[in-house]
Every structure is written in C-alpha cells, then in structure tokens.
Length: 100
Image (cartoon, rainbow, N blue to C red; front, side, top):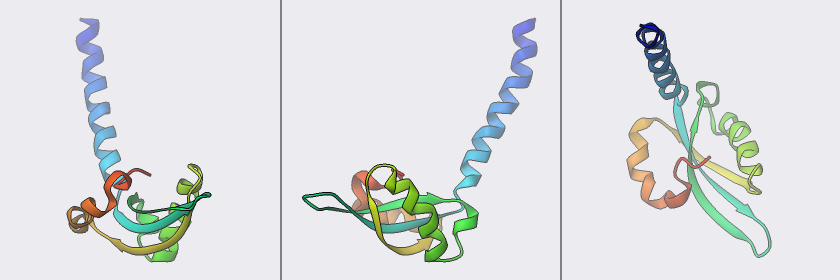
C-alpha cells in the first residue's frame, strides 16, 4: 500500500526529470581545444543550453569553463548547430563527442 502510494508520486517525478534533461540541450557546438606540455589537441562536440545557442561567442562562454575544469583550453568554437548535425560529427569527435 505504501509502496503503491510512493510509486504514484515517484514515477511522474522521474519522468519529468528525464524530459527536463533532454530539453536542456537546445543546441550543440563543435570546438577545438589544447592542453599541456607536450601539447595535445582535440576536436569535440558539446551540448549547450538555449542561452548559448545564439552565436559562437555565446557558446564559448559556456564551453571554456567546462573544458578548463579538465585542464583544456578552448581554442575556437567551429560552429553551433542543432540535433541534425550530431551524426555527421560523431566520428571526428571520437572520445570527445558529448564528453563535456
């Protein structure tokens, strides 16, 4: 009885969280970054909130701190795009596809 009552509240809550998580990524950006000695370079794809979708500059303000937390320096934001651009970039991004 208590379990049934609890599930009636928990299941809709978890469903709402799942939908909210999917809705947070309004666009994506591909970028280039570097770090350390010896220098390492990588190309990646990152999910961004709606507030960063307006330009590569807005995207950079979101991307740079996320990369810096792992020791990477943002070199450039190549482009900002929607869901339709993900598949074509996945192979080139490799391990850095939606990592940050």
